[in-house]
Length: 208
Ligand code: URA
Image (cartoon, rainbow, N blue to C red; front, side, top):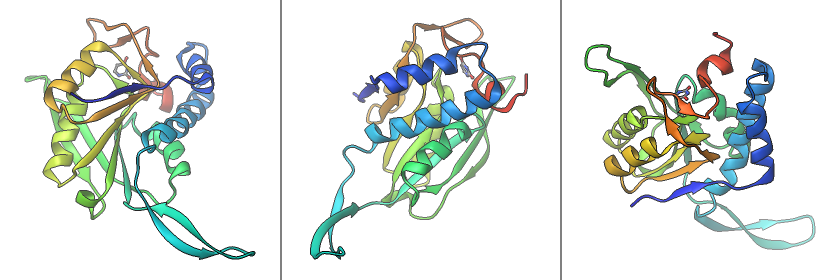
């Protein structure tokens, strides 16, 4: 069964309070979502392997350690974009892919309208980014797409999850680790996480 890590850190909690607050405007919302993305990155990458490398400091030669595998950040459009800069600031060498999904109004299933990845997905650590793990349908579909494109080491990174989304992801992709800043109570009948933070895409981009 996949690992679910809910980050417990005072800085993350503080920023999450700002993000959740309905009075927080677009600029502060965007900044804090990105910053939480950066803070979470510390935990997601804790087990990454490193390679020893002989370097010369101004004083002497020494062995230093660099990341062994490449990292690819893959936001699900559009809300996933909000966390990308924060993660990218922590791992500047990371490449970025994108997945665009929409909901088919007849089948209610997620359909792909865009998917583009850098080469070497199979050899990379792939961070799938979507702030809200709600029904889990989009995340599950995105993981299907990543696997079909060769990705093997995939980690889900989000802000807020709920039991329904976690259960769905664990059922469909039991080997994928899930990293969240908060685990909320439930999903309402409109598919929003409660207490949640509202529509993440709208709040990031000021579209409502
Ligand atoms: N997507 C959002 O933006 N918010 C939710 O609460 C659920 C899905």
